[in-house]
Structure formats: C-alpha cells, structure tokens
Amino acid sequence: MLAQKYSDRLGLLTPEQLQAAVDHFGLGRLLEAAPIPFGNWGQNVFVRTTEGAFALRGAPHYDWQFPTEQYFIRCLHEQSQVPVSWPYLINESSAIFGWSYAMSNISSVRQGTSPAPPWPSISMVSVTTRSAIFCASAPSRRGSSGTWCVGSSRTIRAPV
Image (cartoon, rainbow, N blue to C red; front, side, top):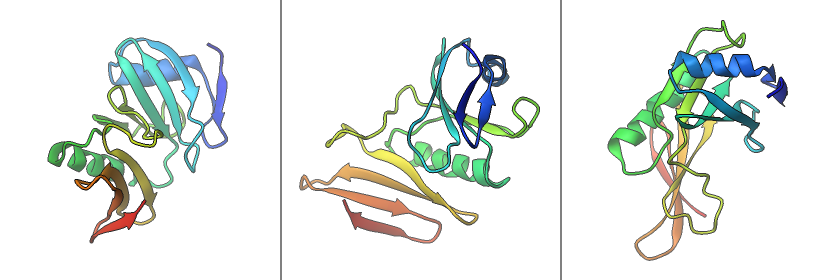
C-alpha cells in the first residue's frame, strides 16, 4: 500500500500511520484501507485487518465529538438489540496523525442501503451541540417502515 489521500479533511495517510493506529488498539495487522465514499465531512476510512473490519474516524470537529459519539453508541449497544459498531475506541493523542481518532468494529454491521435491510440501520445524523442525534430505521409490526431520531431531550418518529 502507498500513501493515499482518503479525503480533503484527513489528507494523505501512510500505511505506517494506519498500522500504528491499528497497533494502538491491538487490532491485528493492516490488510487494506479504503476511502468511505459517503458521509458529510470526510472523516472516515474503511480499515480491514487480520482481526476484522473497522471504521477509522479522524480529525474531529470538536474535542467532545468522539466521546459524545462513543456515549450514544454505547447506550444503543447496551440498551437495545440494534447492531451498532462496537466497541468505539478513542485515541485522544495526536501523535500518529496530527489529530485524535476513533476506531469502531464494523464487522457485524452493514450500511442499510438495500430497500429492506434485515436489521435496523443506525446512522449519526448530527452533532451540532454537546449532544448527538441518531436515527434508526426499521420495519414496524404492521410492515411499514419508520425512522426514529433520538436526541438529548426527545424522540421523534418521522416517516421514511
């Protein structure tokens, strides 16, 4: 693998940097990395190692971004049956990339791009204040779909 620009926000990343990030959490040997072609901020890279598939999320907008995301993902992991990318690991040091980063296990989670995914799809919609809003889409008991957005103060059901 050669150094690659994964996004404007992350810039040029070397295989050595990616392996150092993987090593920090003991996630095996780096096999490949690929840009994630969707998302709003260009903060993510798919990383595959000998231990599984992970999303590396870097260059946070605020110092509280990754801890906030970790909190909400932990809540979903511990209090629901919805598959989420867990564990959500954070390295607050900027020694490897020049910014802190998070890595989450995505081996058992896939993007809900098919018309009827077999499980709810989870996506973080917005982190605009010190709270995050997550949305989950799932078929209802009557067969129709709905989207539930969970924020810091209320839950909103919106039609799909």
